[in-house]
Amino acid sequence: MNESTTRSIPWSIAAALCVVALLGGVWLGAVAFVDRSEPAPLVAPIEVLDTKLEISGSVEYLRDEEVYILALYSMPPAPAGSTYQIWMEKDDVIISAGLWNPTTNRIAFAAYSGRYDTMFVTLEPTERGNSHPTTDRLVTIDLTGINAELEDE
Image 1 (cartoon, rainbow, N blue to C red):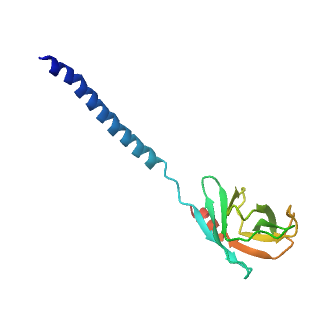
Image 2 (cartoon, rainbow, N blue to C red):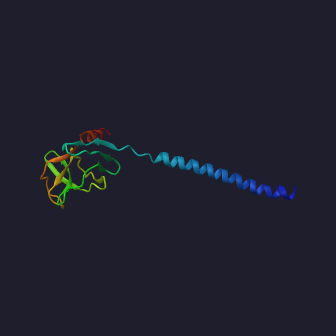
Image 3 (cartoon, helix red, strand yellow):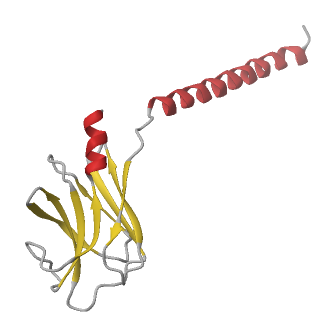
């Protein structure tokens, strides 16, 4: 064997090992992505009850996290001294889910262990919100479709 043949053998081995490592990495990456598939979120549309509001949006329920994500777009800022408040309702029980800042467009909050039938938004006449709704509903979301899909799983 001459000297050039001796030197090219280690380079050939190194190149072959690189190809094997690259193909192995691609295969492992494909397997990892296939195994991490998540179920699609459940979605409910909003119903705008205040005809002066020109907004759109939806609610998504993420099964694995048990979280609702409310998205409202083009919501005007609350008047001074007021705030938007989000509520959850089941039967006659209404609880506050938090205050809404329209500049963020989205809010996420825990679904709690009980499932609710309705989510709605009011404009409360205080910057800190209230313990119960004091004004008419501006937006409402029927969650019974999401609940039915969860029960079928």
